[in-house]
Amino acid sequence: MHLADRLLLLLAALLALSHGQLPPQHHGEGRTDSSHQQVPGTGEGSPSLRIAPANTDFALRFYHFIASESPKENIFFSPLSISAALAMLSLGACSHSQTQMLEGLGFNLTELSESDIHRGFQHLLHNLNLPSRELAMHVGSALFLNHKLPFLPKFLNETMVFYESKLFHTDFSNTESTTQLINNHVKEETQGKIVDLVDKLSKDTSMVLVNYVYLEALWEKPFVASRTTHRDFYVDESTTVQVPMMVHDEEHHWYLHDRYLPCSVLRMDYKGDATALFILPNQGRMKEVEEVLTPEMLMRWNNLLQKRNFYRKLELRFPKFSISGSYTLHQILPKLGFTDLFSPSANFSGITDQWKLQAPKGFHKATLDVNEVGTQAAAGTGFSVRFLSAQNNHRVLWFNRPFLVVIFSTSTQSILFLGKIVDPTKP
Image (cartoon, rainbow, N blue to C red; front, top):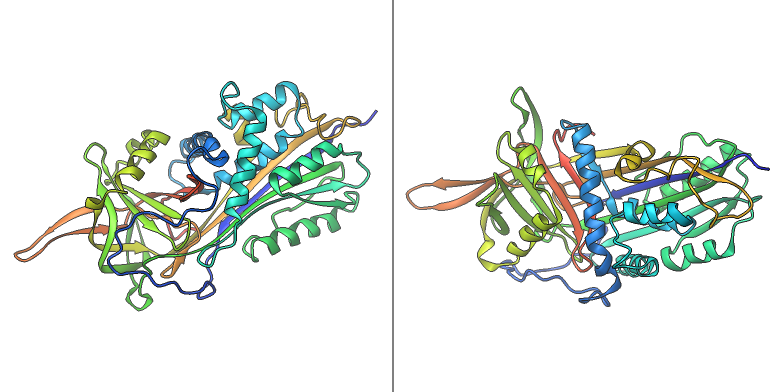
């Protein structure tokens, strides 16, 4: 009879930008074509598009919970990383535990079968990992397995087939060596951006599941670094900080000032298959905008910002910053429907049928860098102001107060990163 052994769920997500490492791509100055080059196999009805609505629903439920717990803090995470890791772990869950995990991820199992879900993630991850001249994206998973544990071949095979997971058999009795192995792997896969993901491992740990998302993206319309100057950013009514503010004076951008909501929305494209929406609430109206942040609202904004009449000349001020987010999933997920996942009642007999496994903890870390040439998880939002003069009537968008950011893969309609920038000076 074995005591409960532990599964550890770790997630690392970031958008990383390296100056000049991606090859240059020339685009016309007056670009009004809102479409991106389609990734092969991502047309209407594709497996990845079938799981996109549930993934978006989970992303926003996770965001709303974090925002309710810490309304005045920066938020940044990768919902894709969390969803993919949980879906992969569900391959080893059985009975009610498996159903609870998939429904917790937002899937309606009467409309989408378990196999459809895993095929959807398989298709999604495959397309996100396709090589590109313009966009460096890498999404992956790794399983670190206790070499003494008799894992079921079906579980190991399916994690590799559907989630392209790498397998490492290791000695968990040597916690220092295993910790170093995991951290070195994550550091390598994220180009050195996430270090020391694992702190201390328990000797009764039997499996560590790691998921990571790395994105290196360049703006289609970069900012000129020499024009960046320090300006005020109004965190709240009593707090003002200085941030480097980037400038676009005479560029065309996709943006709108919502007629029905107190916010402006700016769409900024990256070279390749990625786009960012920046949502800037009017002063003091963040909570009101957050309350209507739904999949339907994101779709509405995105659809509107495909129309040519929203592609207009803009005077843009946008902050340059770096932030990060760190979350303890074993405290968050049970409140989002995953009530069994981290409890002794969880059934992971699909991983091994000889030992009782329990998931004691889960962690997620994400980083975001935004600068003149690109973004890692570009965060930003626009506030539209009419500037009237005798000769001109043009718009000014000034990102000088808290805003929301949504970065997504254009072809798969999947949210890669989601966050809120309250204070860009806090890392």
